[in-house]
Length: 197
Image (cartoon, rainbow, N blue to C red; front, side):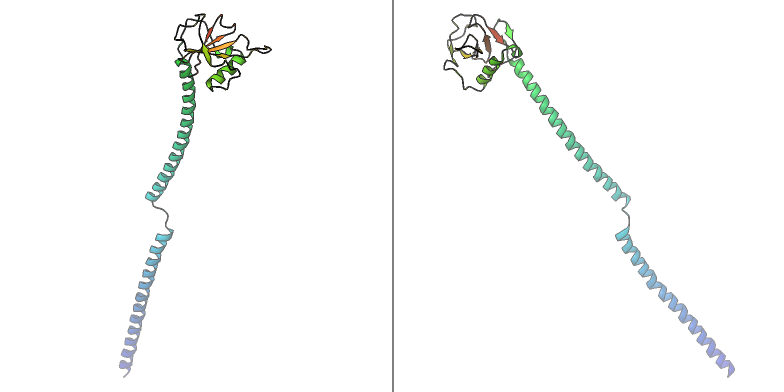
């Protein structure tokens, strides 16, 4: 009877141990699963960018910086190019005016200010202060190169203090050249580096 009780107790203890062991084993599996799931979620949401992503980020930043630099550089280049283009255009314009005569020349800076005013009126095609302005100059003195009768035109250069048109004139030629006279056609100087065209 006593042996039977001992056997029953031993069986119960073994069953209890097996149950406890099984419970621990079963409890570990969900825990591992949950931990694994949490690990996956955490990795997805909180993980740091991979080397590739970091490299891509750096590459993107570099591309943006390169683009900005390119735009800034391009803008600067355009400005410099435009400025250079204008300078070159002015120089080319001056160099493109070929002297038409063997007469002495005069540069713009050496002309009286009233002559420069007249040149500006000629470039703008008026309005002229005198009715004779933009009239045909016959070149009767034959000082200017011989051309057809309507090739030259004359314009008044104001003389301060004079009651009439005075003696100073600008005479232009059909090819764009200009001549200055300060003594009413007795002598002429060809204007260097200027053209009305």
